[in-house]
Amino acid sequence: ASPVAIMAVNENGELTLWNPACETIFGWTAEEVIGKWLPFVAADKRRESEILIERVKSNFESIQFEDTRYRKDRRPVTVLTTLMPLFDENGKFDGVMGTMADLTEERAAQKALESQRAAAVQNARLAALGEMASGIAHEINNPLAIIAAHSNTMLTRLESGGSIEKEKFLLSLKKIETVSFRIAKIIKGLRNFARHSEGEPAEVKYVDSVVSDTLEICRERFRNSGIHLHVNIAPNLLIKCQSVQISQVLLNLLNNAFDASVDTANPWVAIEAKETRGRIEISIVDSGSGIPLAIIDRIAEPFFTTKPVGQGTGLGLSISKGIVELHDGTLVLDRSSKHTRFIVSLPAFVEGILLTDNV
Image (cartoon, rainbow, N blue to C red; front, top):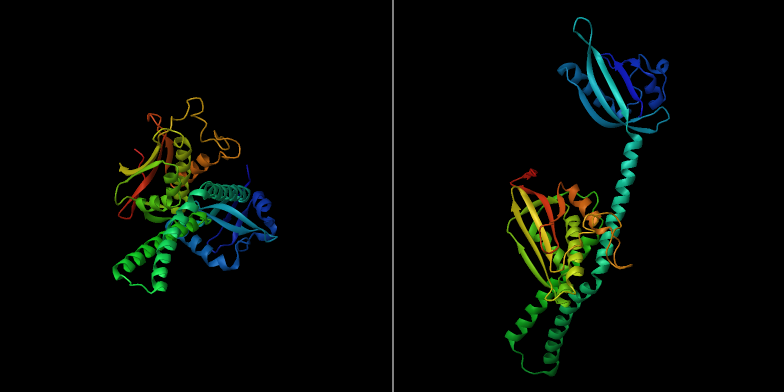
């Protein structure tokens, strides 16, 4: 375990105690600092520290916080500090004692893991986009073909000098406008989905909006493969989330559902959302034969996949589960369902309140 620094200051902020662990963590010896102001506090943080000492003195309360301090060689140290009042034999305030646990290595390790996780999430997101490439091409090519057809018809009539029927021209222009908006919406969805979302603040979003944005970049793939999409999203469901990350989870589940159902007779995939006891449940079900019992407990393990070599990394469900848990939610397989049914459960957001009760 890392050493714990123990120190004490009088009511003027002058050090009266400096244990050996203080020297180990910060580099100053007791002879260098006793009787002086806290050496590890940067000049611009001195007033903040004086306020904390005054708070302990005035309220006789203990305070705990995490902050960055500096060693004698000016290297930063992340410490968990606890401040508590000291009293003399007569019960009179006699200064402040502080303990500091060095968290530098722990926080560095956490940061490294977060960076690795962020890279894995981004790679999985781009891999999911790669899987959808064919469908995305159709999503854009179909409306482009409509624009080209209507534009060509209008140009031909104008160049031929024939009569122009205003109503037909207006209908063609409206059709061009509609499919142009459709393309813009697809491009926006792709841009949002592909961007790196780590560190972005959570926003309150309607579930039907998140689902709709996700379906924009995969609906055509299902249509072209003859897979019927059933969408049933209850209205006015709110969640607080990083919508790009939740969209990634849903797209991964939809990709898996596509693979499981594409070769079945009369294939279908259903996505539904409802509120249940303060939780928003989003479920995705497919017409496939289900997950074999022999592997059902391994499907969320990193790098485990049932897909052929080159068609799956095995990171999808593992990363999706991590994303959902970071949103105080759960991602589970409904073992009672005849078909493969995954449920994403997230806290409902109601009138500015996050409902986090899991019962």
